[in-house]
Amino acid sequence: MKKIIPVSILVLYILLSGFDDIPSSFFEYEPIFMERSEMESGVRLVDPRGIRNPGKIYTKGSLIFINEKYQGIHVIDNSNPESPKNFAFIRIDGSIDMAIKGNVLYADNAVDLVAIRINPEFTGIEVTSRVKNVFPELVAPDGRGLSRQEKMARPKNSILVRWRKK
Image 1: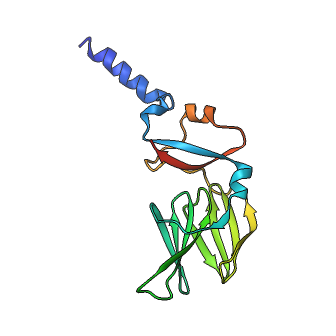
Image 2: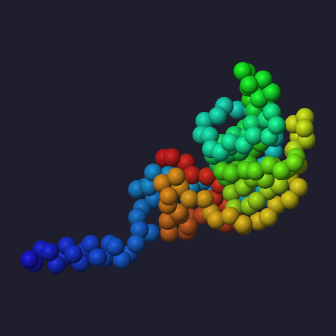
Image 3: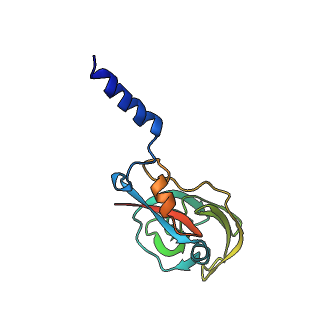
C-alpha cells in the first residue's frame, strides 16, 4: 500500500504539470522558422520540381494544381491527359491549402492569406494582396504545437513555416 501512494502522486504530478517541459529531443518533428520579411518575399514562380509530399489537388481548366505540403504548389498541364506535364512550381512557404477564382490563386502562406494573380501563359505571378495572421500557426504532423522550450528559442520576427522530421 505504501508504494501506491508515491506512484499515484508521481502520476498525478505528471498529468497536472502538462507536457511543455518535455525536451524537444523527445519529439519526432522540429519546427522550421523563417523571418517574416523572407517569407513574404519568397512567394514566386520557379522551375518545376518532383512531387514528394503531396497535399490537396485543385483543377482549373486543363491545369492541375497540387499542393506540396509546406513548400508551395505544383502546376501541371493536363491538356493531354495521357501525358501530363509538370511545368511550374509556385513557391509558398507554409502552404497547405489553396483555392482559385478566375485568374487569382488564394493560398495560405503559413499564417497569412495571399492572393496571387496568375497570367495564362505562366510567365510570372504577382501577389496582389496579403492578409496577415488570419490562420492559426501550423501544427506538427503528429498534432502538437510548439513546446515551451521551442517557443523560447524562436527567433524574433519569425513565422513557423513547416515541420521537419528529425
